[in-house]
Amino acid sequence: MPAEPQVVDILSLPLAQLVAYFAQLGQPKYRAEQLFRWLHARLVRDYNSMTDLPASLRQHLQQSAPLTALEVEAARQSAIDGSTKLVLGTRHGAPIETVIMPMDAADGAPGSVTQCLSSQVGCKMACDFCATARLPVRANLSAGEIVEQVAIACRRGFEQGRGRGGVAGGQDGPLSARPHNLVFMGMGEPLDNLPALLAALEILMDPKGYDFSPRRITVSTSGLAKYLPKLVAAQPDVHLAWSLTATTDAVRDRLMPVNKGVPIAAMVEVLRALPPRPHRKITFEYALLRDVNDSLDDARRLGQMALQVGAHINAIPFNAWPGAGYTRPARLVIDRFVEVVRATGASVSLRESKGQDIGAACGQLAGEKSLA
Ligand code: SAH
Image (tube, rainbow, N blue to C red; front, side):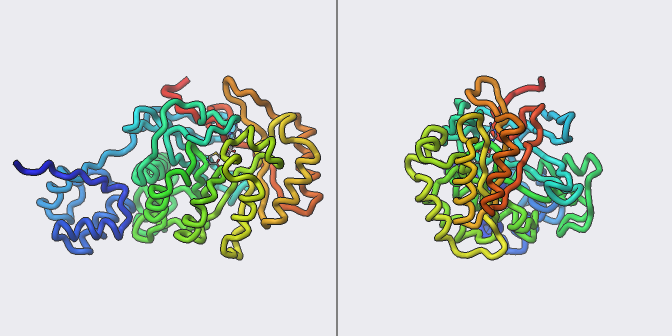
């Protein structure tokens, strides 16, 4: 009996792996490059449109490498700040979410767009203040599913007339509406899905594809220290963020169970031991929780820790979600906290999350299925 044809997840293959797969099919490297451009520069998802590939090859790919992607189930736009949350159906039995955020001058270049990406369905890290932790379904996204979030954002932006032109490989196509910055701050812990993360970064940074500069990509981790050196070795210029969120182990153990394996001082050492990255400050993220981590002693300790690592601090007032046992501090407390951090000499900014009115802000992503 003939063996079942092997199904290849072709959207997850960085160019080098696509070349290797094509070699098995007896196809030359330039054909793999052609296909890579169709998939990751022109963002085409239909083999029939790839007219410069031989018909027999297209037929074979249709059978053995189906282009299954994410499905847009819902889109909600914030009335406050113009950010858009997309709910994307996956094959994992629950959707993921991605958020497309137009930034104002204070957050980035005027008119720039930052996209927040999910790396997993749900999350294992069990941070007590984060809505994603409460989702029952947990699964790793494939590299293709991570990258497809960007493809979907490009297509939407292009349809809405936000194409910019001048983007390598796709001047007139959807890639010209590419977001400026990508942050892995959606659902999931990116370092808990390292192989897919690394493959996704390769595809996103490939000059023949999306052509993102690593400096425009931020990977945010709760602190899975053992994977960090691997990420940095593979992608030394990708920006790193650590969700610190507490200044004592007692409090951080309670908020973020990851701390029991890698306490604060251990993670600080790991960060200090990373190879020097002259232009790349690490970011400490600090969700401000009323009466939990917002004291002036916290502010002083936070500043000191950031100085030790040369990190920039992003303080983020807690975003509420139904059933959360936390609230954000009062405005005056937040402002005083930031002042005291700044007085230590550390660099700090206060970041109001986008999309709070559509459940799209940090820690609010919980896989809603339909429009409200
Ligand atoms: N797992 C990764 C990335 C996802 S969370 C990480 O932990 O870094 C992205 C950021 O949102 C983290 O800094 C997290 O601490 C923060 N966050 C989670 N829930 C929040 C909430 N309800 N309000 C504000 N920030 C929150």
